[in-house]
Structures are given as structure tokens and as C-alpha cells.
Image (cartoon, rainbow, N blue to C red; front, side, top):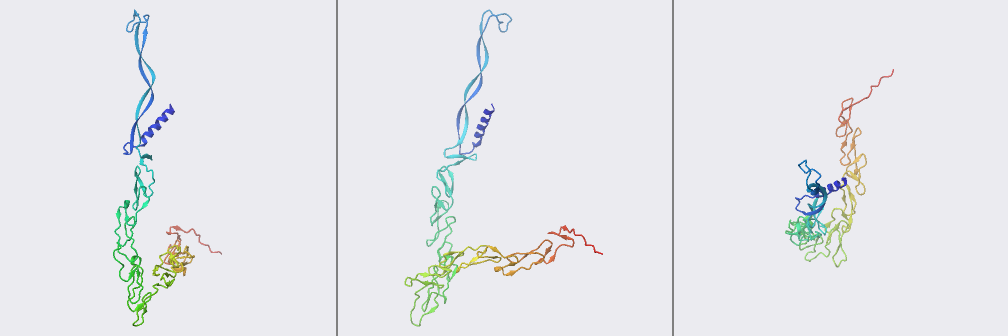
Length: 365
């Protein structure tokens, strides 16, 4: 009986695990058998020697009487069962959709249907938007001009060098060039430059990479090698530039981006704690308060500032902040240098809440 009660309890729990109100839950009828106790009428013979029912006199002849008896029987019954509908499976007492293919950059929202994250598409959300589309399902077209791609999530244009308008429609303002038009033209004599590469467009009478060379009077001249910032043309006939340390680009007009250094900016330096990389040699220029080859270490105790060249000047055991030299005072002291006693005589502690237990010294006779 205990085992049967346990089995029934488990069945009831399974039936109640899924919510019938869940639209992804389906029901069906299940047949089962149960042992029941049923009543029936059984005839029996009443002999004549026995008193007739309802009379003290014996019956003259035997008769058939009926009485109710009970017996065990097996009955087939039906109950409603719940299960996840086709295409769904049970997870944490809920029916969730099943996708036979994993949704790489999305989630399964219906049987074999992936909802992709913005910037992704495909039946399994594994294909990124092309450079001219963005958004959910890559359904939006980029508004960028001059063939500029856009961000697959936001649609923001990534303008090529020489264009800075939000839609890459307008060229860089005069006197600027490069990515985002952030670089000033280096040309002499107010000569304009190519908004994309920074190459100087020398007016008549001037030559050189920066238009810094006057032409001989009455003689036209040109610039055979356009390389800037010390770059050299190699081989000379092709005009290809070999850039010095710290510069890159077609004519060596683009400085290395943060974290890069060396010829063509091929080197990568790892400066920590706000340190900056020297684009020429790759050395880390540490922020105030830090030192070491990669700016990993704080200044030694007692030193602070740029390159740890400053000496701390904290009194009464105060500790010096390694960045700007500010003093962190010990309990009981205050002031810019911790030079002022904060507590009254006989008290000490962070808030002067402790009383000294010192005994006065007695003079010796």
C-alpha cells in the first residue's frame, strides 16, 4: 500500500508539473486499470425448515432469496495527461521550442525558428550582415556614401580616410586629412593636401614632400618621391614608401595608432595603468605613480609622481599616495602633511574615541 501511494504521488506530481494554461502544452486521455470493490446480488435457496422471512412459521416449500455480496474487480478508467506539444520539450516545468540547429547568434523562439541578434542572419543566425546592411535580420540598408561600410548593430558609418560626415558624404574640411579628419595637413606655404592620404598638392613654384622646396626661377619642378616624415622611396622607380619608426600609410603620413610602434607600426606594446607607448621605439611612457618596463609597478614607498621622481613629505607615520603625493594620515593626526595632532591629550584612535591607559611615571627618590 505504501509503494502504491508513492507511485500515485509521483504520477500526480508529473501531471501537475506542466501548466495546462501554457499554450505550448497539449493534453491527451490515458487509460488505466484500477482494482475496485463492487457489489452484486447473489441468489440462495431458503429451505422449508427455516422460518419464512417475516413470519415465525416454517415455509411450506423452499424458495429463492437474494442478498448483496461484494467482490474484487478490475475497471478501466481514463485520466487527462499533459505533455509538450510537437516541436517543444520540457525544461524547468515549461515547454520551450526545439531547434534542430543551434541558434549561433540568436535564440530559438519557435520549433526550428531562430530569432537572430541584430547584425546576424540565416536559419541558424551564423551569417553576419554584409557591409551594406545592419539591424535585425540585416533588414536595414546602410546610408553611407563612398562605399563606406556600416556597423552591423547600429548602422553607424565607418568612413574611409578623407571623409568625416556622419554619412561619409562630405570630404574633410580644408587643412585636415586621414581617418576621421583628425590629422592636420603638414604642407608648407599653406598648400592643400589630399584629404585621404595627406599628400601635399604643391602649387606652381614649390616642390618636395611638404612643398618646402622652391623651384628654380622659370623652371618647372616636381616631387619624384612623395614620402613624408623621413620615409624613403624604395625601390626609387616605383615610388613605394618605406616608413620610419612611428609612421605608416601610403606616404608615411599616418602616425601609429595607440599601442603600436616601429616600422610600419607593426610592433605591439603592452603598457599598463594608463601608460602610453612610444610610437618609435615601443617604450612605455608611464602615467604618474607607476614605473617599470610595462608600467606594472607602483612607485616605491616614499616616492610619487611622474617617473617616481618626487619625494613624499608626510609626517607622523602618514603614507604617501603614489600618484600625487597626498598624505594618508595615521589615526589621531590630520593636515596636508599629517602634521597636526587631532586628538585631545589622553585620547587616540581614528575618531579619538579611545582613551589612553598610560600610567603617570612617579619620580624616583
